[in-house]
Amino acid sequence: DPPCEKYEYQAEVSRLMDLIVHSLYSNKEVFLRELVSNASDALDKLRFLSVTEPELLKDAVDLDIRIQTDKDNGIITITDTGIGMTRQELVDSLGTIAHSGTAKFLKSLKESQEAGADSTLIGQFGVGFYSAFLVSDRVVVSTKSPKSDKQYVWEAEAGASSYMIREETDPEKLLPRGTRLTLYLKHDDKGFAHPERIQKLVKNYSQFVSFPIYTWQEKGFTKEIEVDEDPAEANKVGEEDTKAEKKKKTKKVVERYWDWELTNETQPIWLRNPKDVTTEEYNEFYKKTFDEYLDPMASSHFTTEGEVEFRSILFVPATRKDDIVNTKTKNIRLYVKRVFISDDFDGELFPRYLSFVKGVVDSNDLPLNVSREILQESRIVRIMRKRLVRKAFDMILGISLSENKEDYEKFWDNFGKFLKLGCIEDHSNHKRLAPLLRFFSSQSEEELISLDEYVENMKPEQKDIYYIAADSLTSARNAPFLERLLEKDFEVLFLVDPMDEVAIQNLKSYKEKNFVDISKEDLDLGDKNEEKDKEIKQEFAQTCDWIKKRLGDKVARVDISSRLRSSPCVLVSGKFGWSANMERLMRSQTL
Ligand code: ADP
Ligand code: MG
Image (cartoon, rainbow, N blue to C red; front, side, top):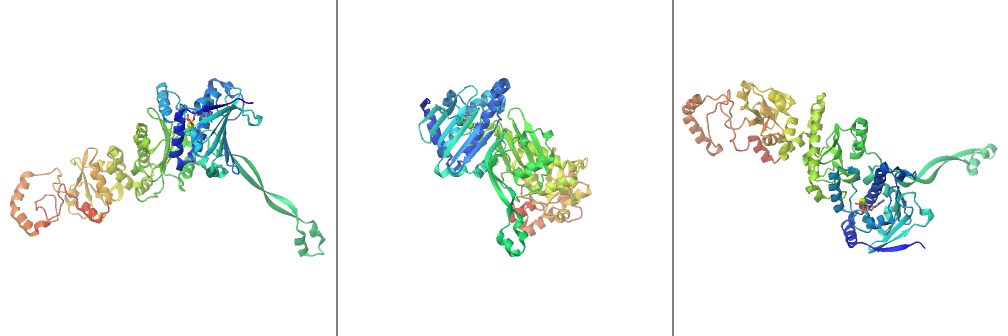
């Protein structure tokens, strides 16, 4: 008789299992992600140890993961050829909490950072092995460590407070190395044992695990076989035609069989050296991952090192899908150690105004069970966000510097609005946003110009950047405020998009030059002659009083001004009030 021993779980394990089953009830499918990532860890460990102990690989089996389903009986088996477990390791790993969960993650993270260890070795610290009981009534783990000449079986029922360990004696079940998990699914969860369902889950969660994952799939091929022609058919041709009996006919039949099918791509594109990835490959990846049909306009593939390490590829789409800034765009896909975690973020990883940028981010420094709370509070995430934003700006700047001017025109047409929103929402990135903005001006009504172009074109005596906000180029061009500036040959930005003015007001200045609204009172063009102004003011004081009396409450003040040339008078806004354009916007509620 094989020695069969009963063990009690450590008290915390039962609590953890309860917690998992209750908190993940509506998200049961994570069990597959957890078990596949354990298998991948086991393979990682073997690969790592075999560097110094090559004899560990003496059983020349491939490093892979195989998932087989038996849909009639509701059974899933997951087999890996990784490091396996000795009897003691089974007790330590699957009977206590010491090896799983967030606590260990944090501990290992700290240790590995102190030791400068290879970060790919940090375990996958999700909800862990016990998630198998989310869907299983009974779990059997049969495992063979290269350190032991025996194979052991760990077995437990859902909800039980104990488990059994025995030696594997069935010769049919012996493994060369590694671990086989058998899940006997709960009645209501038997659907997970459908080969297509498993395939879909693997594709979704583990597509980029770096070991091949095979699933057991039914296949078919059509072949042509020769059949004798139906004699009844032949008879129709004519009884006298005796040759008809000998006629052969071909028929197509589908031959069915089962085989292993590779279900993931083992080398995610972002882990490759950017030098080795072609534009076509980036484009394919982008279109496949984000369900796009056009190639992206730009991409950026990078690795960051130091405090926080992650790899990422970001893309700028060729067209705009959302007209408004949408918070739930699922634009950034987060992976932890190549395992897909989530694309459902709300600004934690990437600012809302850059939601048009799409990308993948893969971090080794985050826990697998990273929750919204962790995302919001994690210092690691804050650093990642900062770096991602910088890279996104570099990529956009790259488009703006492209020799093909049309590229940026297209970009601006699609996403200019988003950057203007950025000026309002992200003051810390004004320096990166401002050079990307484009406006029409009094000297360039056909082509948009950048603030750099404006500044270059400034007159030596000009201190400020002048703008006027209007509802159209025509009304901007005809505004009486413009007269003296045009006379001095000062360029004036024409802010004709409703968001332009708000964006500019948030920026306040560019390259130490203030933005000045030429429709506001006190416009100082640096050519004041105070003496003369005073004289004129006195001379016309009575006229002003008279006009103010006639207009009453319609105006706040009537003043003499030196800003006009040909027009006799102009209505200006108070220094601290809304500009006429803003008032119009507020009234029409377009903001
Ligand atoms: P974690 O992966 O965070 O350590 P788990 O609960 O997922 O926590 O797994 C607990 C432990 O069980 C692992 O650390 C590992 O030692 C062991 N283990 C689980 N699955 C396997 C496997 N397929 N091969 C080898 N060891 C495994
Ligand atoms: Mg795990």
